[in-house]
Length: 100
Figure 1 (cartoon, rainbow, N blue to C red):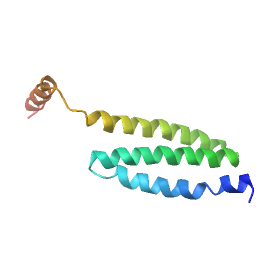
Figure 2 (figure 1 turned 30 degrees about the horizontal axis):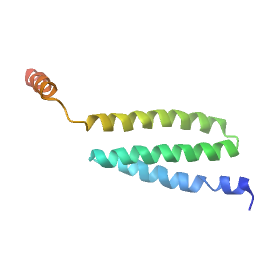
Figure 3 (figure 1 turned 90 degrees about the vertical axis):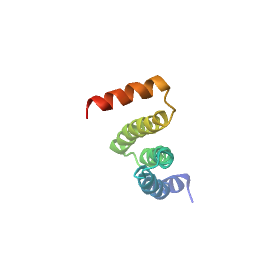
Figure 4 (figure 1 turned 60 degrees about the vertical axis):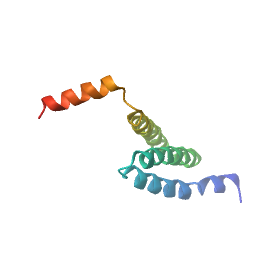
């Protein structure tokens, strides 16, 4: 089997990882969402490999944009899990009390 044929087969694990990552980002738990975004980033890289082999330039551009968006999601879910300082919690509580 040629290298091109092996790289062409990468679309199947990429598709599988895309489905698994999408499942996990729908989970209410931050830990699963973080894993979901990480898995999606790996699948985006795999799609880029396949797209470059088949010269699918629009797919490559789309996957680069998806990596940026998934990186943003990963960062937001990681930053959101960092413990808040007591002053941040007080400010947050005061702000939510004003809107009641």
